[in-house]
Image (cartoon, rainbow, N blue to C red; front, side, top):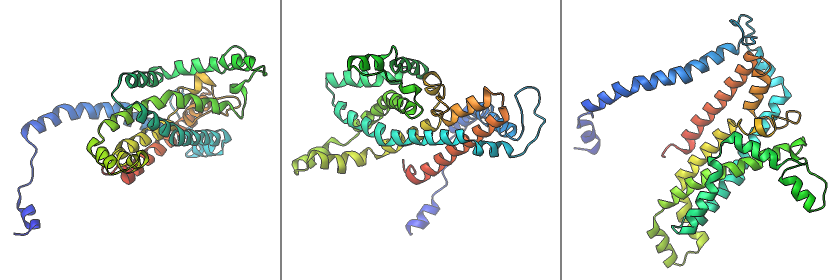
Length: 301
């Protein structure tokens, strides 16, 4: 009998009775929560996006796709998209490589490495709003750390967050400082699973540190690296908590992200239909990226 025939002759696997019991008990509550807190709000936002509505009463001024046209015509939205792209670029090109380098340095099971892991991870524990307020004070050109450094060097005060050209650089600095510890811990966890016997064998065969990292460590870290890239891109698209306390989207909207643009140009201005259109576009961007990325890069993870 051929292998194919043998495979077809095997009885189909059936879910055991206790497996069906688990599905019946846990699936309906999960579906209910998903429907109430995800599906219905998104459907409602999509419905609102077709109306010129200020949030009071029932929406009755149907305008079709005009809100989406207003979004794409708004130069502030284009600036917000560019800012999200900059966050993604900095995350992929600076934050993740820095996290991997630090993880390689502190992955060893020695006392000082454990302490450094804790120190590097602490910024991630801090609330985003609290971190934004702290860094806003540090960047303050009159009283903050930047003012003290400028005064110590005998230079004029630097108002980084008040500069249209440099304010978003301050946001990027805070993002790298805040989140690289999280990715460092992901990589540390991945490094614990690297096969030490392969590294020892490669060292005996004369492979240098870079060769061992490139041909052994990096391939075995592949699933963790792909996961960290996914988290980094999706998190960058949803960035909001830093912007409000740090810059409030200013100066002149130069530090807005898509979510803060939704908040300042939609919610606070009572343009709920317009803000809903922005939310739907952001949702579609995230969903498309997640589906494409998982199919192309995380299919076997």
